[in-house]
Image 1 (cartoon, rainbow, N blue to C red):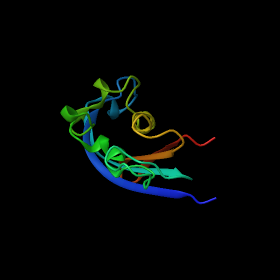
Image 2 (cartoon, helix red, strand yellow):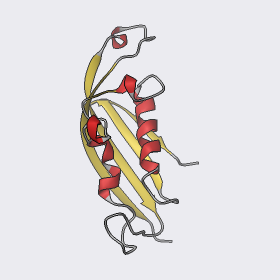
Image 3 (cartoon, helix red, strand yellow):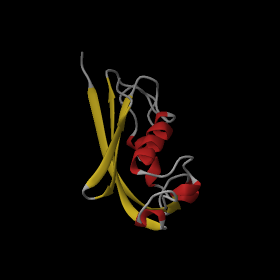
Image 4 (spheres, one colour):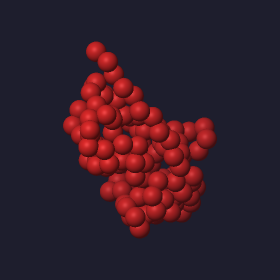
Length: 128
């Protein structure tokens, strides 16, 4: 069966703190987060921007998080005010995954990778 995989990457700037962390990360600090999203499907769909079924999904829907916080994204946000759990890389990846899934048709498999630093990252997927 044919499969399509879309990949996109972007960055956003954000601050956070881990109040219960035993170390310097409990203090307010910021990162340039790098995000890679992969969307995979065995069929093509229309989108908000294209009425014919010729896309896995629109890249714009995958990159919503790079928008400024005032526009609904995560850029220049204080992540503690947005996430319900402590804003670890794991929870940020989970949050982006969950919010991206809401923007896509059913049946699209997502993998979200979030780099907190150039050498430390987390991958979150809905794979069984």
